[in-house]
Length: 139
Image (cartoon, rainbow, N blue to C red; front, side, top):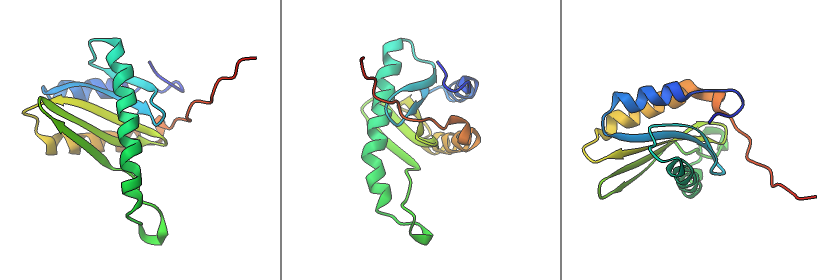
């Protein structure tokens, strides 16, 4: 699934295939909509994971805003990570209102993945900018 005609699934495939511990990766909007994904065995996992990515970024962003940048600009989320029994969840900002999320198993080189995710997000840049969904109103 892609949005705005921008297909970055090839980049997700390259990331997932380059690190064996990665279960799957996706790009999601800040309102929890999956834009594109690679590696998920169950389509329902994609929707669930997109919601988790959106929720994590929503929780982490207020923390980032506590760190003002030069000129008084609010800080932005760079990387959020959750470590649980069995694996890790990583989220990085990948564009305007857009986030890259990776679910990985234990044994992962966290530094390598963090570096590759930030590099990938930088390359994706504004290509992944999304506008949050508007509420649908029934007539």
